[in-house]
Amino acid sequence: MDLPATGHDPVLLAETLDALQVAPGKTIVDCTLGRGGHARAIAERLGPDGLLIGLDVDPRNLAFAQSRLEGVPCRVRLFHANFAELPDVLEVIGSDSNPEESDSDAKKSDSVPKKRGPAVRPLTGPLHVDGILADLGISTNQLFDQHYGLSFAQPMPLDMRVDPRIPRSAADLIAQMNETPLADLLFQLADERFSRRIARKIVEQRKLSPIVTTDRLADVVRSAIPSNRGGAPQKIDPATRTFLALRMAVNQEMENLEALLREAPKALASGGRFAVISFHSTEDRLVKQAFRTAEQVGQLQVLTSKPVIPSDRETALNPRSRSAKLRVAEKR
Ligand SMILES: C[S@@+](CC[C@H](N)C(=O)[O-])C[C@H]1O[C@@H](n2cnc3c(N)ncnc32)[C@H](O)[C@@H]1O
Image (cartoon, rainbow, N blue to C red):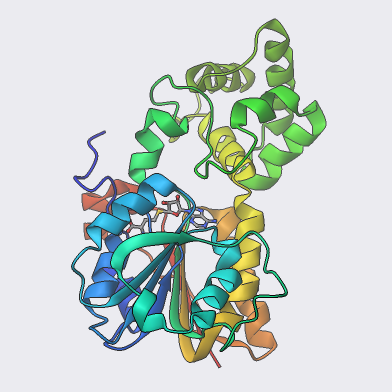
C-alpha cells in the first residue's frame, strides 16, 4: 500500500474540528499527536492566544508532529507521554510559574516526571482545558514500518511496542503466556471466536522454534483456523484479530483508554468537549459505556447518540478510515 506523504491521513478531520468547537484563544489537548494531522489543523485555528498541548507515546511520531507544527500561530507544548498520564501533564503546565516563557513554538518536547514529588507543589493546580481529542490506535506509517513489527503484510520482527518504555514485546508475550490466558486475551480483546484453537497451535509451534516474526505468527494462526471451503469468501485475513489483540495487550491499550476516560472529564472546563475516535468494537464499547456513566452522574452530556462515521467520499479516499467512529461529549 502507498503511504500518504505525511505517513497518515487524519480521519474525520472536519467533523472533529467541529465537535471540539476549535476557536481562537482556546486550550486544546491532542492526546494522540501521531503525524500531527489533527493537531496542525487545530493549531491553525487557535490563534496567538490559544494553546495546543500534544502527547504521544511514540517519540518518532512526536518528533514528526513537532516539525509539522513549526510556525503555527498558537503556543504549543508537546510531551512524550501516555494519555493515561494526562493529569500529570496538565499539572506540569498548570504549575509553570510563567507559562508564557516556556510555551515555545514546539521547539522542544517534555516528558512527564515519573512521580509527583510532594516537595514540588503546583502554584496554580492542574490546568483545565476546552477540548480533548483522542484518535486511538496506531498511525498508518507505524503499521507498515519494520521498526514497530506490527504488520503481517510483510515479514518483520514481531515487536508491536509503540512506546519504547514498554518492557515486553509481542514475541516475549507469545513465548511466555500459558495457553488459557492467551486464548482469553484473544477472545476478550478482539472477539476472536477461534481463540482456543489459535492459542493451542501457538503453544504447539513455539515448542518447535520460537515465534519471532510477523509472517510466522500469521502462518501459525491461519493454520489453526478451519478452512472455509464452500463458504463465503473471508473479508479479512484470519490473522487480523490475533494481531489486533496482541497489539492491544503489548501496549496496554484498554487500560490506558480506561484511565483516559476516567481522567479527561475531570480535566475539562465547563462546556469543554471530549472527542474520541475509535477503530474497533472493543474500544468503541468502552467509550460508549464510559460516556453513558459520566452522563448518569451529571459529569458529561453525550452529544452523539450514534457515533459519527466517515462519509463515502472519505472512505473512498482513505479506506483505512472505514471503521472509524467518533463520539463526543460536553462537560457540564
Ligand atoms: C491514529 S494515530 C493519531 C493520528 C493523528 N491524529 C494524526 O492526525 O496524524 C494514534 C497515535 O497515538 C499514539 N498513541 C497510542 N496510544 C497512546 C497513548 N496511550 N498515549 C499517547 N499516545 C498514544 C500512537 O503512537 C499514534 O502516534
